[in-house]
Image (cartoon, rainbow, N blue to C red; front, side, top):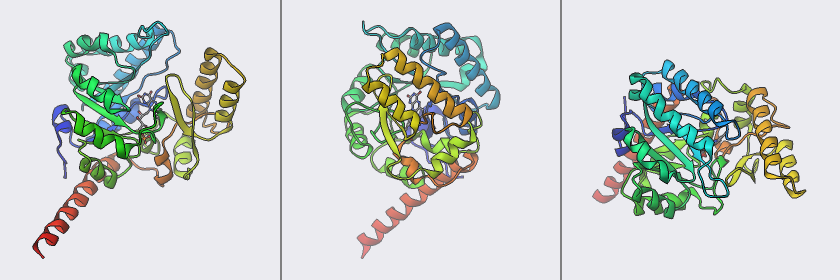
Length: 345
Ligand SMILES: Cc1cc2nc3c(=O)[nH]c(=O)nc-3n(C[C@H](O)[C@H](O)[C@H](O)COP(=O)(O)O)c2cc1C
């Protein structure tokens, strides 16, 4: 078995530097367990940003318990941190952070497994102490070097540097993965994960070459047999996607990237004709649910990254995760052997 240790795998206690990131509001409890079982780090996603906070927190807790019942290995939870116009953290984001802390407190088995909280969107400065005191490893997703430096300064353990080509909510200032990741790895000394465009062992090897300690992926895991909470049509749509099939549409905190559909066109049209934020949010939530639960990829919306154009098969996670690590190790070994050969001739 090739384990491919990095500072990230050592910090979290996993075999491979491969993370399945949060893909809310889509459910990923079963997928997260499969990725963790395979030796990577699976992530339980948040179940929606528009639900009443106490209901949302209860649903997240159920999803955490489901994942914990399916694996004995470490896993993560993702909480996007939204802020209201007055700058306060949204009650639903706060409820999710507290639900993660409570889940660990209530059950020592869950406390051992639920090791990582990944925050995204805004930075949860006012909850940093709560997260650290709970014993969680805190990862934070960033789209710029400035945000990465700030996160490190405020005590975050790992940053995920995510480039503009990523699926889901992307960044207002477009910084692509290949430029962003080396900038971030030069600027901080904590482990950095590359996100946005990774899909196989070669892209994992490239991430390590750029100074990252692993990769964090969303889109690759949609096209997986283990993504059993989603309609099967979503995996097939990823495999069928070609270059140019993705587009940017208005998201909750920033622009989002997904596959072109009548649902995305309708959302853009609603925005142009002056729909309110609440109307846009309600429409989008329904369109996301139509895609995930009903497999309606015409009037529905399926977020996905540009990397969908390079994904051609529906894989088993138990095969993909170790295979990626083995391929990355083989690529790095081959390059190192070729460099030695060049030096000696
Ligand atoms: C369907 C879907 C839903 C997503 N939802 C979230 C989310 O709830 N929170 C978050 O931080 N990122 C979300 N993302 C972004 C992913 O966590 C990840 O950063 C991204 O997929 C990485 O780029 P890749 O798609 O090229 O692998 C989502 C991505 C997808 C494809």
